[in-house]
Every structure is written in C-alpha cells, then in structure tokens.
Length: 181
Image (tube, rainbow, N blue to C red; front, side, top):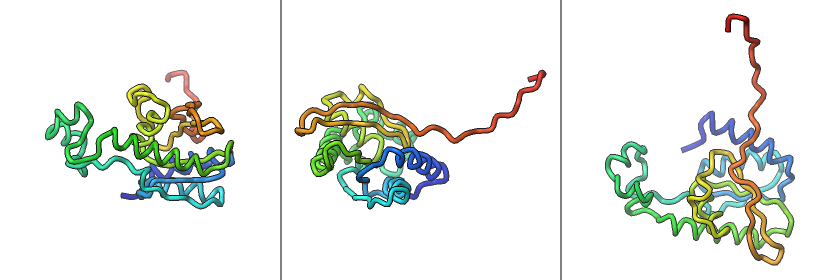
C-alpha cells in the first residue's frame, strides 16, 4: 500500500530536516512505504537509496491484513505477548534488523551519517538488540521520526544519542483571540 497524503507530508518534512545533516548514504527497507519515504530524501541529496530486505517490518502471519480490533478479538492470547501465529517472532526480527544495521555500518565510512529508513517495530527491536536493551525500554518509533546511534570506530559498542525525534512541524498561522474567546 502506498503512502497516503499524511505520510507523504511527513516524509517530505523529515527529508527537509535530514538533508541539512548531510547524509553520506541512504538505506531503506524494500517495502513500498519505506522506500517511498527514503525517496524524498534521495531527491534532495542526489544520493541513491540502497534497498535491504532485512530492514522489513515483521511478517505478521495470521495477523496480516487485520485491524487491531480484529486481532484483539481473534487472537487475544497472542496479542498479549505480541507474537503473531505463523509470523515472525520479535526475536527473529530483532536479530535480522540488528544484522542489517551492523552490515550497513561496517561498509560505511567512519564518522559518516547514514540514514536508514524502515519500520517502527523492526527498527526499535534491532536498535534495542544492538544496544543490549530490552525493547520495552524505549517503546516504539513514530512515523517519520528518527533515532541517532553511533558506534565506536573499532566496530565496538553502540550508543543511543537520540530516540524517536520528529521533524519540526510546518509553521502554522494562529488567529488572534478576541476578548470573548
């Protein structure tokens, strides 16, 4: 499913901010919404977007195509543990996403900024794995928000510098309040 109007506006706003940070590379999940989001930044930077299937969101198994209400009604026990029947476990997703992030970092110039566009749960779980955190510590990431991680030049420990930061909103005109308001 493609980005809707809200998603396109969020992606454009985030791209306008991220371009000012002079990224050296852009990587993305190969799924439609993530790669379209990365495309806005690519157009502003002139960089190519590298696609990596290991940055995909989890496969939801029996939950695929269902609303949260339908999942709650049909699979209450599985929802309580957030493990979809027939889908990927959060452990598997965390491992594959962490491996993708490490692989991208390993082939990047030390000290360079690399933007990785993906999906809230898989990126949160992958970052938590790299940082040695329980994924419940940070909570999920919002749409078109970003986190900043760094890794020692020798390929050692990861550090979380920012989490779930959003682009500043567009200026909004505010009407003057009258005495009766």
